[in-house]
Image 1 (cartoon, rainbow, N blue to C red):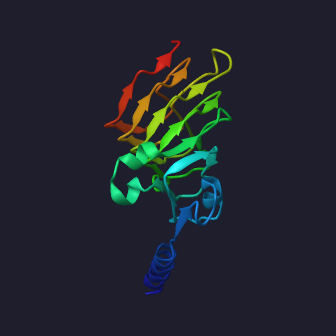
Image 2: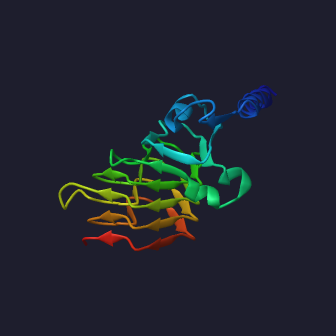
Image 3: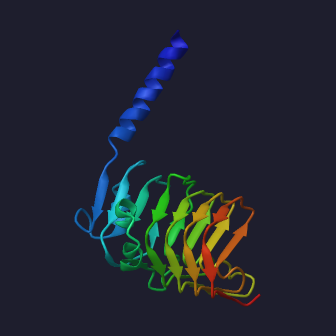
Length: 198
């Protein structure tokens, strides 16, 4: 009987957490996507209006959804009109704190990332969902032995990568996607016109 009471208490706590999930609007509530992420809690959604956001974002271990209006409308024009531009200042999107499949990036153009590994999206010890994005014109730099994953880099990752266009990215190895020690699921993507040295 005591065991059932504990289960009921746990389920009640979980239900209250998810019922209190909020939608954070960018740029209405916060001017940048990263500020929206910083203010969020697991289960929240950061909903981004069309525009160009010059920033490099890190999920900092939060299992949240970051999406353009494509998330709520299904209108693919929002993918090309909602841009996260890394401004050649590192990976555009970073997952490195054990985020799981409920950490979602959906409906963006992700471009101009420039990092040693993972120019567009960097995934390490995490398993996010990367869905319906245009991951374009990202690149890596450094020595030949360092430059991996122009578009997406996965290391010890079980990411779910689906419905993306991954194009015109550059790296020494894995210009489109590079996976190492990973069990990622990669399906229904268009991966084209990426340039790798090897």
